[in-house]
Length: 174
Image (cartoon, rainbow, N blue to C red):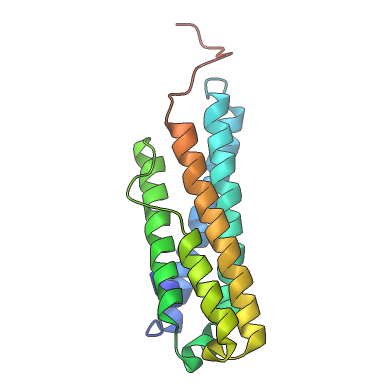
């Protein structure tokens, strides 16, 4: 995500990051489909995968809106509060990825809501700092959706990974 929004990132770097993200999403969807059809996979594991996928979809949509105003924001001067929110979002997504890979609840991340609230207050007070009211509105909406999606993802991972899944209804004999 840092490559995605960095002013210095060239088109090829952004395109490489986007292609990697699309490939990861395609692989995740395929893995989830395979898991749904496996007789030994616990329903809770499939539910967790679906939740992660749904929230990642929300993150992508929010980032697409942010990307649509990126040039205008950079021309006006990237607000430090936006940078702070995007860095925290990137760190939270990394923690979520680590949690899924390791199988433990995510740690070292806190809610993005206070950062988004502070950014919203700045955007409302001085929309010209990001290129005008339309850009500020789009950015406020997109960062709100970004914060919601990532906070929901982290909370869901913490809740679902805090307890081990039970193999209810397994068709495999012991």
